[in-house]
Amino acid sequence: MTDDSSSRIVATLRSWIADAPPGARLPSTRALVAEHGVSPVTVQKALRTLATQGVVESRPGVGTFVRQVRAVRAHDHGWQTAALGSSPERDPRLSTALRTMPNDVVALHSGYPDRALLPERLVRAATTRAARGDAVVDRPQAAGLPDLQAWFASELGAVTPADLTAPAASDVIVTPGSQSGLSIACRALVGAGRPLLVESPTYWGVMGAAAQARVQLVPVPSGPHGPDPAELDRAFATTGARAFYAQPSFANPTGALWSPDLAGAVLDVVRAHGAFLVEDDWAHDFGITAGPAPLAARDDSGHVVYLRSLTKSVSPAVRVAGVVARGPVRERLLAAAQAESMYVSGLLQAVAFDVVTQPAWRTHVRGLRQQLAARRDLLAAAVREHVPQATFELPAGGLNLWLRLPDGTDVRRLARDCAAAGVAIAPGDEWFPAEPAGAYVRLNFSGPDPGSFERGTQVIGRALNADPAPDFSPG
Image (cartoon, rainbow, N blue to C red; front, side):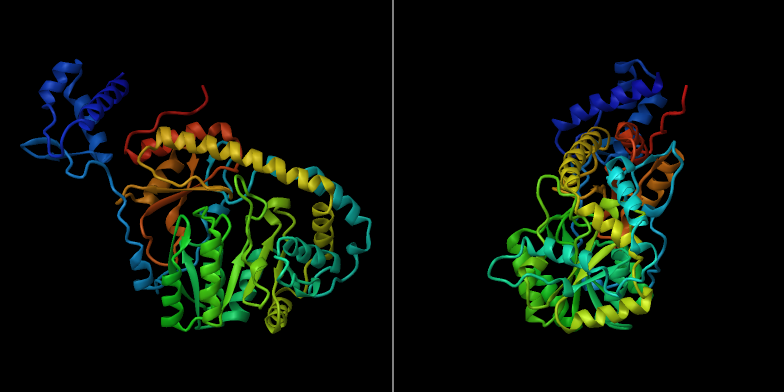
């Protein structure tokens, strides 16, 4: 009963505050006790909730007042990202997104789609057929199975403008997942002690790959619509970098989709500095209201090194990706790939090629987009209802919502509090190569049981408000 009374007082006072000027004094505790017929403890709990939400401030011995800043405002400190550079103390660590959780945990942390979103029947059938073929015993070519190389090249070629030269199968290197592609790019394109420009925030995997190769990361601030070309140009000029890693389509974690104008401006900057753009098209199959727009299709001069993964859309067990690179850089990447893994399992390549060339694959991808749209909208609605302090852009594709929380939020503590209540979330600082530009968390809407989104966001909202989470145990 106390929780209900406190919530009722919070709702009433929020309505009163909405019409009150900044600095207005709230009714006294005694007045609120008399008005609502509750104890002083219940009133104080309601006032603490409002203070946590940032709408009021208490002045001991004087009273409680509407904050001069009416709502918690997210300050934009992103400009400091480029000025400070990479943090010298940042060590690679296992990402929260890779952790396996018990079945009774609401898993909003994962970076992988739920099994229900995978083409399981296609994968099983392809595996059976591949097991009967020569791929079981043959050693494949170092650059990959010719048929799969041709498929990666033709997919990119299908969206290449007619006035540009489409990639050839010989431009493709098959790697055991895009993480391997990132590793060989860090070693072959950059090298130990050399700078690599990255968006900030960016995929945590490139940070791990850079650390292994002893590459120096240089963060370039990037917002919900992509990086600022002027900041990118400045970073190239001041560091002498010769490569920029980016995710133009449905970036992880922000969900950003670059506009055609931004894509052109970034390509112009890269070309002007005689540099490479390492384009990670990890979410190619996860468009929702827009399709991917690979920058590699707009460049036939060898400036773009294109990574196209099948792991998340086909199966986590089929770790296969294609790297498309033109010119001498392709040979350097191939040498690095051979040094790392010699070649990719021919059996896995055969499975991947079988799946993506089945007519049912395109049907699956179309249906997947509808399912992702429903899950995205369901989670977004739950966040708006139960975590009103959070702000976010609704992504046009990908697997995640990227939530900005009130300044000062301890996202690590928030993640621990949520975990204690049976909800796993990913703290946003894992995606920043230096100090985070704000308080963020990433929520995955493609994980298991979308029916648990309501419960998960309730727990997040209560933890954010420092309000005790309810008991969700069965019975």
